[in-house]
Length: 395
Image (cartoon, rainbow, N blue to C red; front, side, top):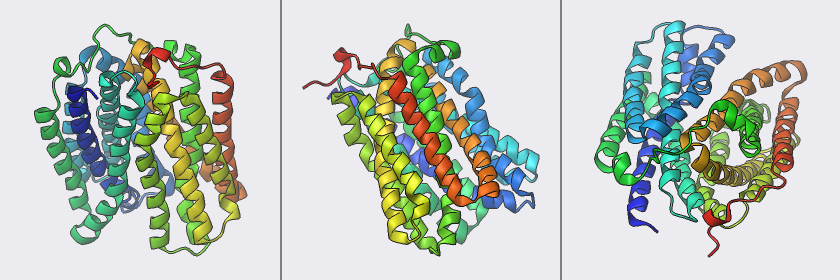
């Protein structure tokens, strides 16, 4: 393994992990904070969705600028904006202000994790793209998994404002870490300044890229239904809060732990196969959810879902990384990220309508159907896909 690139990957992973802890801290308290303003359910949903709205709108532009201007400065600016946002949350005293803060927070998040992912793909040695992407994604998932528990403790013992300030403190600490230990773009080789920067339309015209964009959208739309309504279903079947916490933790941490080994697997085989197997597994798990009405069966299905999602993410990132060498790494990753964010906007709205009309079982059925559509898209559009042999690890 290339020592310099491995060192950059280590510092990137620590930085992304800490940043995601900060993001995870406010994840569980955001709906509570919005509801405490006395607004109705629609406005609570709009406040929460604002984060992904700005990500969806701004993603394609941020990626192209990063491909042309560099990685490190974007990451540092994003972390600095995180710190400002943490204080703005405390100062926001009405719905309009909170929506603006959420929009800014979503924009800031675009400058950190997707750009760090692009940098990891830039510096990955030949045959190790999946390993590098998997390592960074593992750090992000671990941070996101730790954050909600930590946020709950801070909220309970120190209050709501302390949770928001924690986001700021962690962001400043991470920014200092990046400034000191992540080399400049020129030193790390993180930016290929003559690489292509494909436009949004050019990306969608590429069959492989279009397949990944659609897959990300349908997966987010389907899985988002589970994450939105599984807590309600857990209450309906008589589960305790601690039992649901175990289920959620098992799901998230299994995804995290699988990133690096599955990334290595995707380096050695056709990543399309890994993605398809994962999507089939998630479809089965989500479809079976309403037929399970006890803790252990639901835990088992979430373990299957976590395992299967752990296959999808590294496989799709490897395909994206191969394409990004020609299209512009951040340009392409930002568009796929926008597709995911759009799915996370659509999911709670669509799921809420289905829940009101037909009940919670139909939410899971439709969610499974959406993921199944994404799987069919990959099977059809990528039926002849072969990864570039020169980039694979065939040892």
